[in-house]
Each structure stands twice: as structure tokens, then as C-alpha cells.
Image 1 (cartoon, rainbow, N blue to C red):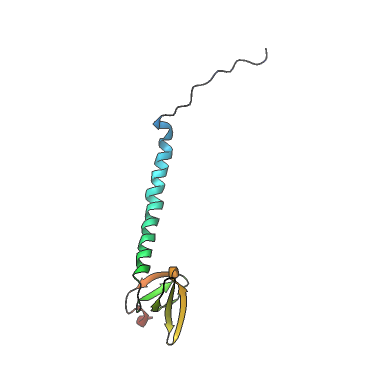
Image 2: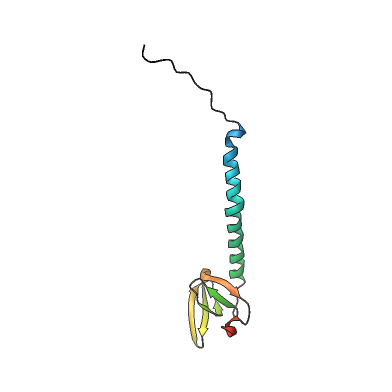
Length: 104
């Protein structure tokens, strides 16, 4: 008596127009965030694999020096005369052009 009958407003649509905004957002995330990050990670991995003794590098901690020995997980970097530090290989951030240390 006090409650009126409820009628469905319409069945939910499951066509492509309902999913279109989610598809567009995923495509934007992929092309603007995921893909460039994967490309950068691939370039960094290739740089680490090509690392050899004599290369001048900079680490994420700001250490700049010349590579003296490359191991599987660690790299030995000479930061001054007769001063060698061992750092993890993945902390090597940048391969510097030859002769950079002389100009510092």
C-alpha cells in the first residue's frame, strides 16, 4: 500500500561502448608510461652487459670513476689513484664519454 512497484530502468549494456573508456585509458597508460619505461630498462640492461674494464661510469650514488673489473653482480671502480670501490652492477647509471674524468 505504501510501497510502489519498482521497475527496472533498463538492462545494463555490455556492448563495446561501455568498455571504450577503459580501453582508451589502458592504451594511453601503455604508450605513455609502460612502453617507454620498458625501452629505458632494455637500454640500461644492454649498457650493463657491454660494460668493460677501462670504461668511465657514474653510479646512482654519485661516484664517478673508471671501471677496473667487471664481475657477474659487482663492478670495481677506481675513484682515485690506488682507491678502488666495489659497487653492485645495477647501480651503474651512466656510461660517460672517454676523457670525462680528466676534465673533472
